[in-house]
Length: 335
Image (cartoon, rainbow, N blue to C red; front, side, top):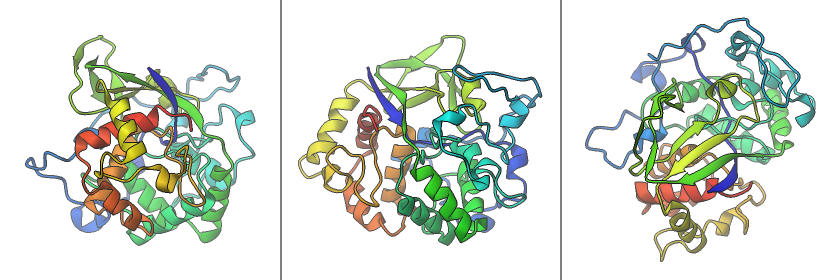
């Protein structure tokens, strides 16, 4: 068992939040087509999304989470123009664009990415990323250079809509805020051959309470330890990432040596501890689901921003199994 820190950030997305967002293939232009059944290399498990999942209505009952004296309701947690601030002492004062967004065009950055930038497996953690890197990603989303493979997932559609609506000043303020935050160690990586069965909760998986189990296969099963706590957008909400037996060692070999020419040692660009260099981001402790999506998107060419030219040859020969191993290893590291 290894414990690392998640750099992913996000929340649950609801049908109401997707109103007025493009859903047709013509209107999207920002995601690739759904892979065919013959595309066996596509890691569909890493791109969870089902807008037809019916969620219980958000109620106004005050709720609490461990380590906080605050109370927020599920209705507040599901409001994408509001970021529940469970631990105000864990971060500097939040800018308005992070705390509440700008209606009706911009959702609160802290709603999906959490007030402390920790996010979740359905998107990215922003805590501690260089401000210049965050700004470049927003520019890539806005220009269409950064897209996503597979189906038009709610988290991607909302990110694209936000990026297009944000002003330059709002982007700078948000980037400066998230870059000042410290990443948290939220992910426990467990290697195993058998995992709890899960259900899809719109954009992420949760473990069944029945205790039923199944073979893991070549995937990572990333689930919140407490599903409700994650849904309440607690930035300290921990995760378990189940990975195939032997993944961490195999991923470490790929990351450290490049696997005899299969790829390039990650430290070449991301630094000796994989915590980033200059505007190049840290990759240590990130959500493994997020990492697999990014590796696949780079390989598929749907992530084609300014720095993608450096990543494209790095991922060209990686198999889906390689991506799982690398993601498991990186998630096991402290950020």
